[in-house]
Length: 131
Image 1 (spheres, helix red, strand yellow):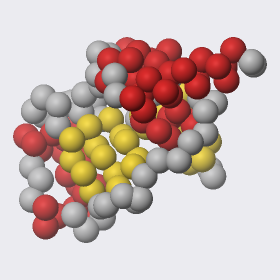
Image 2 (image 1 turned 30 degrees about the horizontal axis):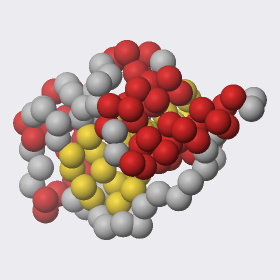
Image 3 (image 1 turned 180 degrees about the vertical axis):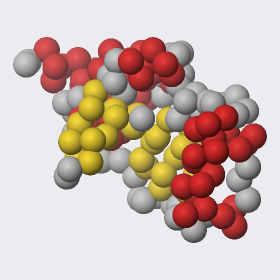
């Protein structure tokens, strides 16, 4: 599920970001699928193992900004399953893509609490109030 700056853009406040943030549900099945995908995309040399993605608060960073992908297995202050139930599905050039829902994004940003997160909350609320 896409979170972070790309999700902020989908929910009404387009802004630049140098990182694609993706959160996965922390299960053995998903960890196995992720390892297979990473190997298929040429990241096998990083030697990730399934158990790496079953630990708490893992962030795997692939590449460098402005084209970095961060893979997380925890959402700040939100249960993944709850967030997934309330996801927003967006058709991105024929690919259905899961984004964190608006309310869950606000909670996630509030709990993260960085300056950029707080600005995102302010701008999202301003933009969505106008709709």
